[in-house]
Length: 46
Image (cartoon, rainbow, N blue to C red; front, side):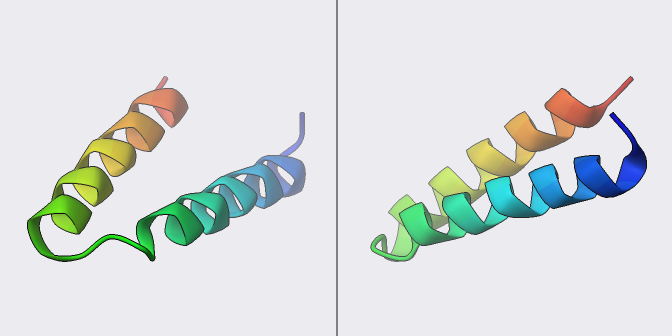
């Protein structure tokens, strides 16, 4: 997989996560955002 394809994949995943989080509010939103961000970072770390 080349870099542009990976960037598209990551952006698509980020957009999907954003859509899921849109319906949440307050603490629930913050908790989910942090958990999902950590998971994404773990997935791309070497």
